[in-house]
Amino acid sequence: MPISHNTDVLIIGAGLAGLSAANDLQQAGYRVMVVDKGRGLGGRLAGRRIGDATFDHGAQFMTARESRFKAEVESWIKAGVAEEWYSSYPGQPNGHPRYRGVPTMTAVAKHLAIDINVIRATRVDAISSQQTSWLAELDNGDTVTANKLLITSPVPQTIDLLATGNIAVPADKQARLNRIQYESCLAVMATLDGPTTIEAPGAIALENGPIAWISDNLQKGVSKIPAVTIHGSGEFSAKHFEQDRMAMGQQLIDAAAPYLGIAKVTEYQVHGWLYSKPTIVDEAPCILLSEATSLPPLALAGDAFAGPRFEGAVQSGWAAAKALMGAN
Ligand SMILES: Cc1cc2nc3c(=O)[nH]c(=O)nc-3n(C[C@H](O)[C@H](O)[C@H](O)COP(=O)(O)OP(=O)(O)OC[C@H]3O[C@@H](n4cnc5c(N)ncnc54)[C@H](O)[C@@H]3O)c2cc1C
Image 1 (cartoon, rainbow, N blue to C red):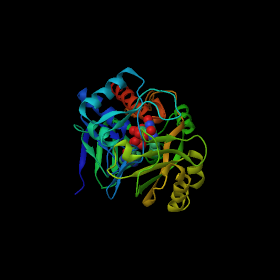
Image 2 (cartoon, helix red, strand yellow; image 1 turned 90 degrees about the vertical axis):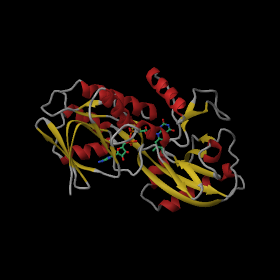
Image 3 (cartoon, rainbow, N blue to C red; image 1 turned 180 degrees about the vertical axis):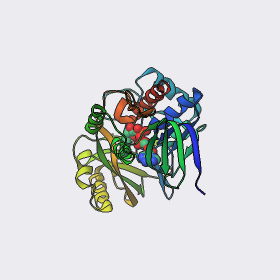
Image 4 (cartoon, rainbow, N blue to C red; image 1 turned 30 degrees about the vertical axis):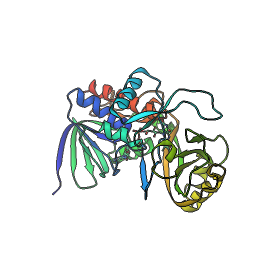
């Protein structure tokens, strides 16, 4: 029997932007419902297991620049869901600290979702404006009526969702959305029969060639057994995104050989991130799409707005929550 839900604010996406906004809105007294098509929480903070191996295969770490975000990271460290991973690795000068989730990056998302009503494994198929409220149709047949709506999906998906409801987006805002671009990433998760030769702290960023990043999940403390995550570069991933995934994964494994020493790959899987990191972002921390229109309050957030990374996604969520609180 389909259910008709009702809430003050519906948030599409339980990634960092959606969950950060949800916490601020709930704290301010709003009833919040978050819907995500993924089985897990965190969106591009993603973990996977292969046998005894565990992988972070989306975001690898976070940096903290702005004061509220720094305080937030401190609170996660106190809660035991984050810790400093490193501030430099061989060949790199000392930089600002890189923090990781504990035991995996998704721990931060799980922590942010503790008090939030999240409906998982459920896609919002369509949205439409009903004069003073929003109606969302879910793929399980349920509907949600909400006074305010926040969409945090990658922007090309948001553009498609807006089109489902014939939502009249002001031309200047549509142009800003159309400008945003992302790079893709082919991510290989490989279990090994022995340790890698990657030096502490177990991560390497590469400037040239098919690989952008390799991390040793055993050294990082994510995996109990030797296991690497290999991220294809933006160029490699774009060129080969539609080709046979396992064959492309093997190419990346071959290119990673100098870092694996005598260890042999025993098993591997490949995940394709179509929208991995934004390469062209909007200058604003979020967009209040309903501003100066007759639409009910509608905001867009995510890492395409406040900055193309973990911290940017959180800050965009906070900015969108504030914008929605002020919108009627
Ligand atoms: C391979 C990779 C490596 C990265 N490395 C780093 C790194 O080391 N450091 C760093 O700072 N950042 C990194 N990033 C970027 C970082 O992960 C992102 O900036 C951040 O997680 C984005 O959060 P978000 O909330 O904006 O979006 P997302 O995490 O994408 O959340 C959006 C959510 O919306 C959901 N959704 C979309 N459409 C619908 C729908 N119709 N119905 C229901 N749900 C929907 C999705 O399932 C998703 O969970 C990396 C990303 C990738 C992919």
